Length: 398
Image 1 (tube, one colour):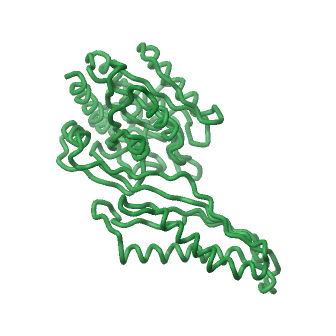
Image 2: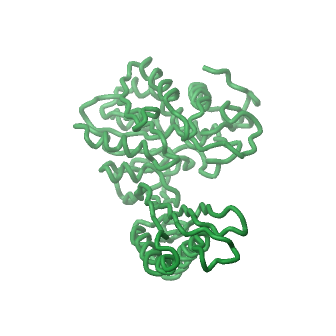
């Protein structure tokens, strides 16, 4: 393993050495979603092989990325899956104080891309492998490590479908996204799309002879804003979430090249993050209808080839576990938490749940550190995670 950069050799709370060493190695792989993750997956597979644990890989269509699935314990009974993604978000344009892909230790924190989101959880699971084996589990622990969570949960979609086809699949799934080791029972779903407006270029002195795709695109965004205002005012609302309503958000708007040229094309990328009781596909249909019946006719009156095209991206299902579900009771008891929350961000949990495997989120680290420059995880969080996993092993061995 690569040498660990020690900035402070005596942090207030020290994580177990095996976990830190494994996290150091995992962080060293640049698994930004645009890259292959095969080197990282090969390292994990070799580690499991060294402990006589067989693993299976499922690949993306290009063959450059893979999920890993392994079972510790009996193969013929269902068990609990521990799920984590190994891809990370880019560091481009961020002001890091040191190499993002080399673990640094200082004042009880471990710094590096993916430490919190979510290689810390993966490292803790791997470090616990010998303990899982030694416990003589009566119900198994399944390890599910995926690709491309950050860009659409593509790996989890492939893995969940593969698991659903197994004769014996995981009974329940714990997704180790950073939650400060507090159980999260639900999160919003997401419907996202790209809107492409095709107009007609021309000189800005004669806008009557052109179709301004930028301005039509602005009307699309304005309609999103009106949808948002209506939802906030009229609902539906779910007080378990913050915010309590479905959000309508445009994140990308590309158009135009010069002030004196009427833009002939525009692209808007937008999303709806919806509460469980709200079908966001109806909101997208409403927007499509407005574009076709209100925005498009005057465009085609000038240029018959004008168009407004919507390309919907793969939907991310929401996750909604009942307060009294056995998985909720299990994770509460393992963490000692009296309450469980719900969050606005999405995870792979909704995909597992949609495939028939109830899921919950509980993992080390704070979501506030995810995706940030100088991302870090408190060593105390890794300690808490390993204690959680040890208690889980006790339950599965009972």
